[in-house]
Length: 163
Ligand SMILES: Nc1ncnc2c1ncn2[C@@H]1O[C@H](COP(=O)(O)OP(=O)(O)OP(=O)(O)O)[C@@H](O)[C@H]1O
Ligand SMILES: [Mg+2]
Image (cartoon, rainbow, N blue to C red; front, side, top):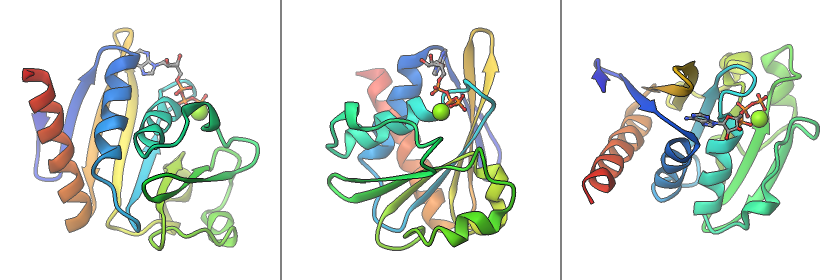
């Protein structure tokens, strides 16, 4: 693990490691939280979102990629909106959808780099990159709430490793 002030990197060796990150975050998130996912095609963004939404108590089979519908809403322990911005060219397209981002739901935004200007500064950014058959996860916090989520996530991942 490497650490700078606001950025931390983790090695995710396989699909299960990506899922563990999602599941741990699912126990920490609250309405109003915004999580942006960045990464190429096949990086693992939807895998992480599925595990996170399943950890909210939603049947994982109901969580499919919102690539074509742009956004799906789920109702678990808290409401969640899952957005895929792959087809968006302008950040304003996200704003026009009028979703409860930063409001009454948890927001999970895939391809967050395409709509960066439309996201609150205080969001948790999760960037996935291919690395040696697995993935490298770079976690960035943009403000106090996302920093709290980042620390909570790292604590959970470390304590489950030791278990
Ligand atoms: N840490 C990992 N190591 C190896 N494979 C992984 C890892 N995390 C996820 N995968 C696998 O990568 C594949 C692509 O994952 P996923 O569909 O979640 O990517 P995506 O970022 O949503 O892609 P797209 O943008 O094309 O929708 C899946 O087969 C998944 O199991
Ligand atoms: Mg996907």
